[in-house]
Each structure stands twice: as structure tokens, then as C-alpha cells.
Amino acid sequence: MSVAPTLEVEKSFFDEGAPVVIGVDEVGRGAIAGVVAVGVCAILPSVDAPPVHLRDSKLLSPARRAEVEPLVHAWAAAVAVGEAEPAEIDAHGIIAALGMAARRGLISLHEAGVDVARATVLLDGSHDWLTGALSSPPRIVTRVKADRDCASVAGASVVAKQHRDALMVADHERWPVYGWSGNKGYGSPDHLAAVAAHGPSLRHRVTWLREPTLLDGLD
Image 1: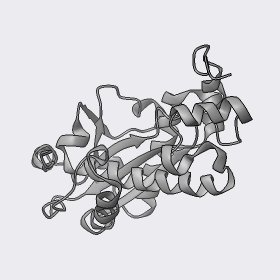
Image 2: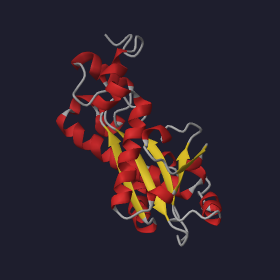
Image 3: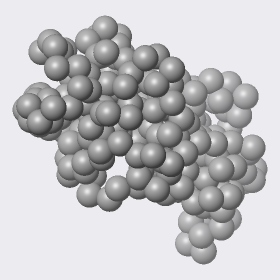
Image 4: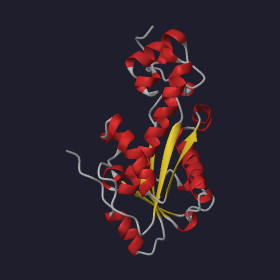
């Protein structure tokens, strides 16, 4: 059984004087089609205990994620999801696209009244891909496995995953041959076979399909 994320790390930031903590996590980084989505989940020092079934989105079944997502919206001070389009990923690379998506998510939080400038931002992973995307970055702290251990980041993960999956299901209606309702844009064997047979769609990251070994053996 997976261990529930806690607010231990976030409370340490509040103890240091942070007025708000924003958990950040990305979804779709390794897909070959669709947007990359970055969830941002803002919490305040008065935050209640996290929703009981909250986990990193990768550890939840689709049904459980659907149950937990509205609870995250109700629990957090504000949540948002920023996106970067496949064409932006092709033009600028995935790291820059992650920064674009996160910046858009943080702008949404700012517009919702969150004091982003004074926040401590808790970023999943060991690489800070966010600071360079912001003209005046707040305090940004990276933490490996924050999506598993930290409730704000787990909340961001769930919201981003639900958002991106819904986009891929909607795109599946227009391009059903690629099976996006099932593979969500990741390079499953059936998805790669469909690309080999039909070519890429407008929602594919075309530069990613030029890798020499990606479609080998699928002719």
C-alpha cells in the first residue's frame, strides 16, 4: 500500500515565514503527442489535512483520481494547470516547454489572488527547470519524489493528470486511429504502429518522431 503524502515539508516552509506554498508537478513530459501539462497547487498556513486518498497521480487508478480531483480543488487555496503545445515543444524543447507551461499556471494562480511573488514553490524532481522561465522567480525548492511525499505536489499531480487525460480523450474523437483514449499520447506499440501507418497528426511532437530508433521495425 502506498504511503499518503503529508504536509511536513510545506509546514516547514510556513514555519520559515512563507505565506503560501505552491506545489508543482508535470504530466506528459515523455509523451509523443499532446500538450505537456504542469499542475500548480497553492496552500496556505491554515490548510486542513489533505484529502484521505490523495496520492501521486501515478499511484491512483483512473476512477480514484476522478474522485480525488474535486477534493483537491476544495482543499487547496487555488489550483491551476498550464500547458505547452506540441508545436512549442518541437520549437523550443521539452525543458523550455515545461517552463512555459508552469509560468502559465502560475499566472493563473496570480490572477486568482495567490501571492505568487512571496510563495515558496515546491518542485518535484532534482532539476530546477522553472527559474529560468520566470523574469522574477519566487523561492523555488526542488525535492526528489515530492509528488509522492508532499501533499501540495501530489495535488498538483492529480489535477494535471486529470486535465491532460481529458484533453487526450477529446483529441481521440478527432484522431481515433492513434488510440489516445487509452495511451494518452505515450508511445505504446499500437500508437507507434499507427504513426508508422498513417503519419503524424497535428497533435504529435514531430521532432520526437524523427529519433532514428523510434519507429524502427514498424514498417
